[in-house]
Image (cartoon, rainbow, N blue to C red; front, side, top):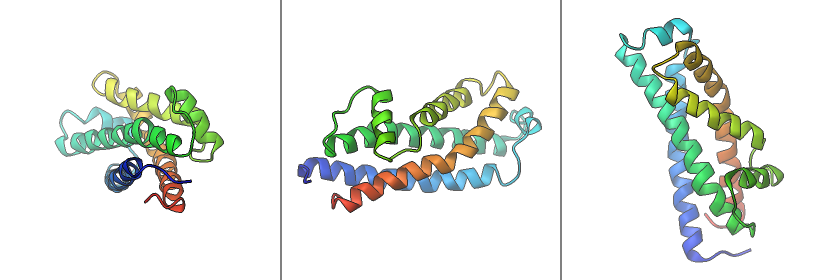
Length: 159
């Protein structure tokens, strides 16, 4: 299947972007979760600026990668594959069916976690701790989805 050069160029650009975002997320994940992130750590965020910056970087990179993949790369890849891009949940269902993501439900859970990490950041250290620990667990799933999408692009000769 061939795609318009404009679409191929956009896929190539997005593949480069998400590769870089993956590297940055992995680095930040390792820096933040080198040990277990605990409730005590969450309570120290106001005093420990280095830790606060690592948390902020993790939350931002996790959310940005998920947004770039879910809102940009996935719809464009689905269109290139001859699928009609639709609402986010429908795109995720198609991606799951095509084996590009593990689970649409898991992806939505990751999205909700991102919202918890952002919006509960200041208010509730218990929720933040839980969301960060869950986000850490989901990093590999997010990276795996990126790898599958990039592999699909490369195998079709669009990269």
